[in-house]
Length: 308
Image (cartoon, rainbow, N blue to C red):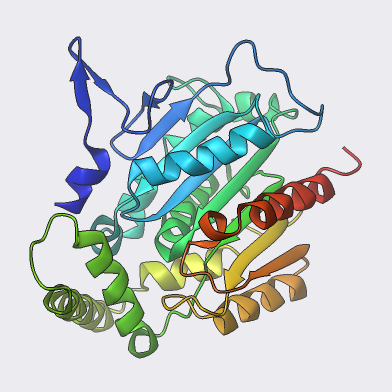
């Protein structure tokens, strides 16, 4: 199963080693923590202290590790919290279940793994947080984190910058049945030995059944909730600067939907930067144009913390 591939770990001296590599502690099967290296020195006093990274649906840890390496080059003294984002689990879980699964992100960011309370959050005024979300699935798990934080503290999740890579897209089922089923088929290709078109057809059938069931019981989809949550100041900190990274060649998330979401964010008072890439596929911008990618991240971060 793809979830098993995502959370697979090798056993070393009786302990599970993180699939993200050395230095990462497995908090849950989806959430991994890497503390800042003891000898690391920030390149700037305004560098982020915590980087929260939500992968795309069924992203392999070795691919997410490349983003960790990129951020580590920019911000060597940051702590990393990385979330693996299996597609199937996200789609069949309720918002309450997703939020419960994402609740450990809160102490990972603001306190120890054992405890996190209101006092620890208030004491972390110098905790500068950069969040990166990739694809719609990463957005769904981020939205669940926002909901978990809101339920715990009654406030929006505090952060200084949000990077949204190849997301968010439209929440219309008919418009997205093809792209969503293709994304699921890509994620399953490593463990399901079927022709790609057959795998995509099965994924499309599953999505249709899930959509139909949700319509019957009047439930809001995970996609619809996440797209709205990111532009809701009660959930997502309005003072956080935002960077959209996207391309017209993305065949899973359409660029028009991303620009529409960015425009809505501006209307609601969010500071927004946008960077369009040429000829890049879905979540392929960093791989194809690394200099442009990391330059955009650094530039927006400098704007986000200006005046601190």
